[in-house]
Image 1 (cartoon, rainbow, N blue to C red):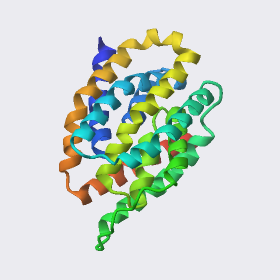
Image 2: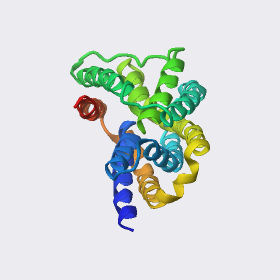
Image 3: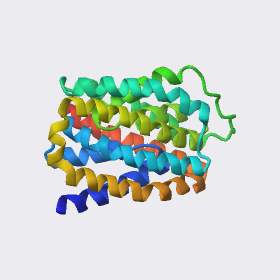
Image 4: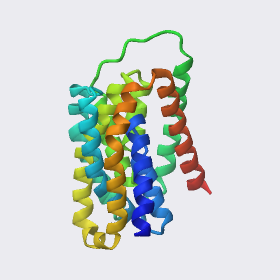
Length: 250
């Protein structure tokens, strides 16, 4: 029960951040599980099983709040799922310590770009959704499985940094994440699914906390003013990935 309540609170806090800013549920949850001594592959698996339910609740909430772009959602869907499945198989057989610092360094740069946008006086027209979303979704899905979280940081940060509309980006990325997470969980189940029963209290805690927070976070995403939202996204990306980069290099 102690593990359940710890992960319940962690799942609620992580989803409040993720649903509002478009990232950090997976990173936060998998980091906690690894700190509790759970192996990286199993931590990622547990996180993604919980995320099947939290991303469904979050996606529905964002669609209802009209934080959604159908064209962006559809472009993210298939390549994200393919990347997620590939990442799951790699993680169960290869150490992720080589690629993790590279992704973290890239995301720090994206975080700085996003943060600097709050000082721009010129209002830009939101960028139209283009073909560049496909490879971005593939990389995002791959890194998401590999690091236990990475779909939001990679996809949301890159799209926002390249001037896509921030609220629609956050909502569409969250909605697509349900299908990406479902594909990743299926891939993990085929490789290490038999061990999941030993970690059910942690999974249920993350799941319950995340589902409870999803509708609240979607409302906040819609209501928060744009520049503070940009600043929060940028600082969150920089902080998480600076910590991950330092940890990987020490």
